[in-house]
Amino acid sequence: MDIFSVLTLIGGLVLFLYGMNVMSQGLERLAGGKLEKLFDKLTSNPFKGFLLGFVVTAIIQSSSATTVMLVGFVNSGILKLRQSISIIMGANIGTAVTAWILSLTGIEGGSFWLEMLKPSSFTPILALIGIICYMFLKDDKYKYIGSILLGFTVLMFGMDTMSGAVEPLKDMPEFSNMLLMFDNPAIGILVGAVLTAVIQSSSASVGILLALSSTGAVRFSTALPIILGQNIGTCITAVISAIGTNKNAKRVAVIHLLFNIIGTVLCVVVYYPLNAIFEFAFTSMTVDALDIAIIHTLFKVATTVILFPFIGALEKLSYLIIRDKKTDEDDLEQAPVIDERFMSTPSLALAQCKTHMVKMAKLAKKNIMDATSLVKNWDKATAQKISETEKAVDKYEDVLGTYLIKLSGQEMSQQDSRTASTILHTISDIERISDHAKNICASAKELHDKKLTLSKKAQSELDVLFNAIEEILELTVTSVRDNDLYSAYLVEPLEEVVDQLRTKLKSRHIKRLQKGTCSMETGFIYIDLLTSLERVSDHCSNIAVCLIQVSDDNFETHEYLRTVKTSGEEFDMYVAKYLDKYTLPKKA
Image (cartoon, rainbow, N blue to C red; front, top):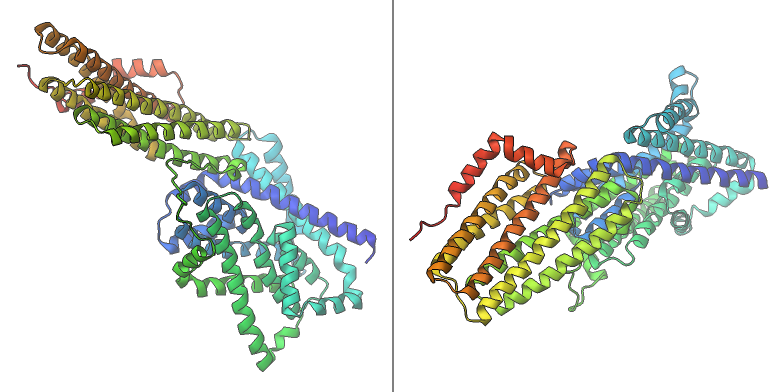
């Protein structure tokens, strides 16, 4: 094997890695929305989590990418640590699919169908379809499909190039003698781990092993320890991605590493003593590409079967390794964590943004309800909490807004672009809602400091408005959280009722001023309260209308509102329903 063969081998590896990267990115972008829905439906059921990990990894062809996603999701608070463990186990088996695909290069036979199964036969067809999709079709979905097919073609071409480069080795006794060193499990595991860690791709290191197996010089005793090492080395990507994250995210990387280390140790302590006693005949047999795929899969399946009942123990072990300090407080409400790793997959980046937007909306709603409670019963601690929460909501808007602006620089589908725009507009309105909580709190404080009280009639009327505001906030949060268009449609008729209530309350209050049953000073505070509450409903309306417009692909806000309010019988029906529900007390 001369210098030119070495250069060819390096070139094949580069093509392999590039093809894998292009294919993985295309798969992630094509399946991004579906992945989001899968994660949204995830429950604490470990079997569902295992299936999710398997499916996602089989789709994106990378257990490292799946684990990096998990690190990001746990870091952002989207997933809990325990939920991620079964997903990691599924991901480890899912990545074996890659080995089976690569093993196609070893197919031999003279029949037409066997020849067509060889990558050298069908990849040119895939490349032709891919280039047509990528260059001539405008739909983003077809462009992603094109990049997947082109990436796969480059990957398989790189694999074929590596196999061709190492072919002269089969006639070199020095190569066979060198491979004997890897029969030592310690050396084999170390080499497999280091190689995989350096190139940060177990698929690539498996590809190299598959290429070497084509020489006919790789024995089972050589392949097994290298495969064990590859499974440890692939964890380096998750470990690196966990740098700078919170403790639970670091534990995800630790569990991924523990899973493969424990599996490797179990294999070593069981297989090698048994082999020493029984001297298995297959140990000295040479392996081909299919054999390596089988070994790869059996190791992962066996490890998962053994460790699956010990998910809780793995979680506890991760806590022993990454310990909490008494002073550590992962308060996600006060410190939103937006993970930069998802920038390359906009749909997943938007999923975490939506999660934080929902938290932000819940905080704003709670802030308003806490503020309205102070009008009746002033409490200094609650007022302080409102101020702190308002600052937290401001921080959410700042972090989310900055992240979304950065994300807009990435290549996004039309749907993702609309989603990003919707979130950006929504968080602005949510922040304004929280601002009005502070205004309501200030009005309540003024009443308390000046020892003023609202009349019973004024307070009972205000309570009706408070209840209407609570419902419109709940409808808004529900529509944002679940993308519930029905709840969003209900916001506008209730907002109309809030406007009517404000007008009636203001009119009644003016009459009380004229009668002298209410002081002028109290009256100003009362009007301020009415104004703040009415503006809260306006911002709820803005959020709901934005969601509806994105769904209907219509962005004429004023035209939409005019049409709904002037020509909607259903709208009038709901207005009448809410007016009946929020009836003001009869006049004295």
